[in-house]
Length: 109
Image (tube, rainbow, N blue to C red; front, side):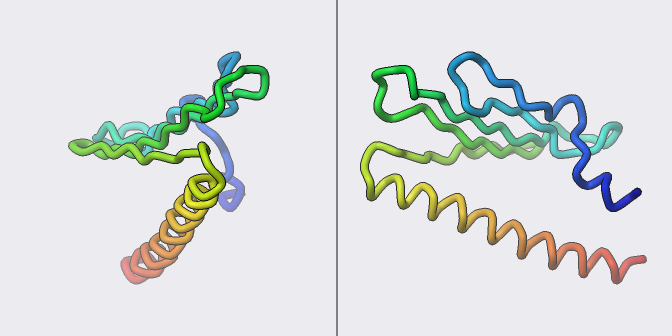
């Protein structure tokens, strides 16, 4: 059962899709009861029924004190390719970080 908990979604991380958003999700990064306002917010505008060419995209990551927002442009083929490269690179780095963190956590048990 504990293996499945990693895939469970808390109510604050439920995907909310406004009429014109493919994804609009604000997720807290700390467990309930732990201090900190860390969060991740993802937003990708839905433009299939609009004339707008480059959708609004936003990836914001915040801890208790700092916040960064990464830009992902889809305006040109080169920028689309770079945006996908950027998110793939970030995901790969996060996976490596998680694996290293898990290995260090295992040493403390």
